[in-house]
Length: 606
Ligand code: F6R
Image (cartoon, rainbow, N blue to C red; front, side, top):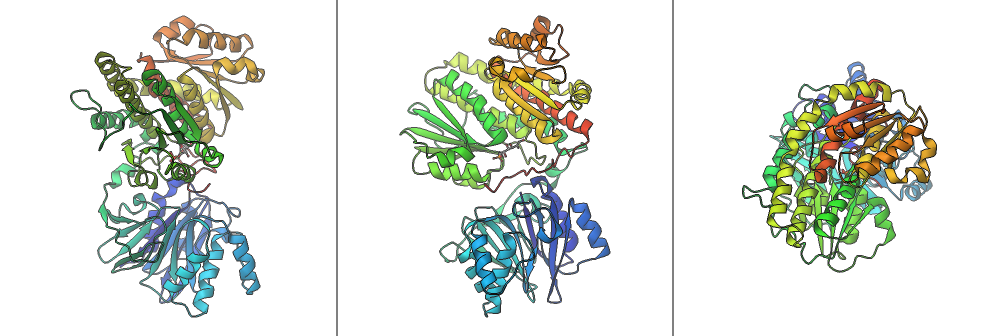
């Protein structure tokens, strides 16, 4: 979603702002802009589309100044158009915003009564007009922001810049994260630490409700009650190389290829030399747990659906799962002795965070499985388990998915051990099988050429179906999501046994059907469903192993043969061909792989 950056620098800031915005491109955006204050005057440049358009504009119409703010906008209120792009300006105030001001219509009406009109369709301009209104009434910038914040309902990260103030930015956080960076005689503000990585590694995260007056001398932070708040700076480790493509054409390609090393790192972190699973602090007591409630969105929710099979089969632990946007409004009862588990790559997804807060006083314990260790979801959990995937920049989640699965798989094993369902030998054997995964994924990555060849044909299709059974059903869902989000081809996934209850009507020779079927206990049943497709002329791509290809590879359109894997952990391995197919199909279609249209990496609005 929208990216924010601000710099109080010692040199011209326009190029640095654009550079920092580039590092926020991964969040998804459709317009961008910057504002600076120079010789006391506020000015701004804004452009629709990619940042290159803003850079071009700045070549023709440069923007001087050593203090500035910048923004990448993911449209919510108002179409992607220059008049709606941030920074918004009213008189002496310029502002950038991530989030939604829910009461902006009432505020707009009230401002109209004061004779103050809007130029844009956005909720953000209302914030600028309000702040400028208070300035005009004689408030100082700090007072104007305080008065403005008191009028706002909704979720926001806001950053203000003022005419005549070259050593001042004011930042505010409610619902959407903001980080303050400390430099040498310079200060920065960013939506996340990645934006600021080349500038500084010393970061202060604003807490919920905080607002900060930032000057080159430092930041003075107040909490939501208006008290001065002491928020210590941390040194974070995001080296610039981690957010490079490292020679790959796209971040997504790099992130797919990185999976063996990321999984190895996570295994080393969580599995001791004695083969025991190590969790931080007091760990998790699964033995007295009655129920696990898992909540997430999108790809992260599919990781939960796979894990449900693991927790139920390995530990006999009942699991409820819901997508966060439904869960939060359903008011689900949370029985005693329930642990609520939230899975999120970004740790900032608004719906998942709201669901966590709903469970706060109801569940016995809040556990999260996150990639961004400093995120809101991690910080608001009783126990946060990092997946250690490293920064994920491609909008389509790949390595975060496999690392989420790995951590959830380890938790399911630990639950099985604690609940007496797994004896020492069974536990050790399954841990060993997990350890084999990085090597197996390495082999699977060599299928990239085959995936490219098949994808060239998939790219011609208008609709594609994915089928899987048992643990492979959520994988089918993930395969379909990956494909549609980056290639824009309509794809649906079904539990293969469900096909004949309706979706089989879609099958014809123009609809490729991708069947994910390792040679496991459900293989024969999946193959029967696959035969039903073939009998109706549907071209089948069978993703399986050697035995599976031998048993059922005749007469299919294409086969992708993966190495043998312990059936339990097959979803982790089979995620890779799904990613490769989506990636190569997108390449064949010429879409924007890393920043697909309409999508945002970190979904910080409802
Ligand atoms: C799909 C994808 C999304 C995210 C979802 C949740 O490739 O990335 O479906 O999985 O938006 O995001 P996080 O995990 O950050 O909560």
